[in-house]
Amino acid sequence: MPVQIFVDKLNHDKTAGVTTNQAMLLENGNRIKIINVEHSDDISVLVFELGRYVGVITKDINGTPGMMFFDFQKNREKALHATKIFAYEVGELIMKNFEEVTKKYDENYNLVELVVRSDFPSDFSAS
Image 1 (tube, rainbow, N blue to C red):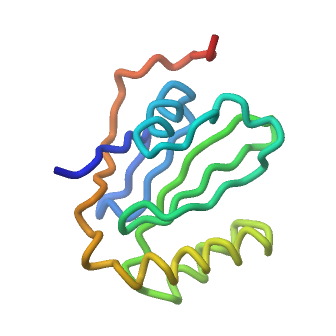
Image 2: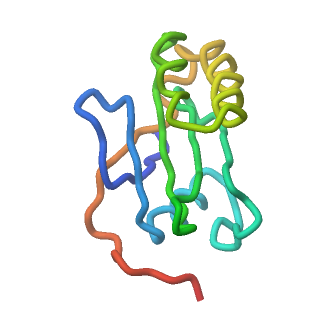
């Protein structure tokens, strides 16, 4: 049974999902064993492998963290295109993770499922 990761938005073919909902971000962090997401003042970006997805935790210009997931479907051009929205160094990390995800893409395909959820609180602060 795949690990469910929650997102606010998911594209039609489930190859990209995003959340900026803080309660959802904390729950996802717990599900994928990334701890202390709520204490991330010194982290500007985190790139990681998650099954067939490359995951990115980053902050917007207001310092609010968000989580994105990309399934590049073993397509290097698709991955390179996506890196253009990030700083060069982040793009390099995404490509390194893309290469690792691609090695076990078929084997890890069903480990994670992105699920749109709307029942998380929209205004949440970790206390």
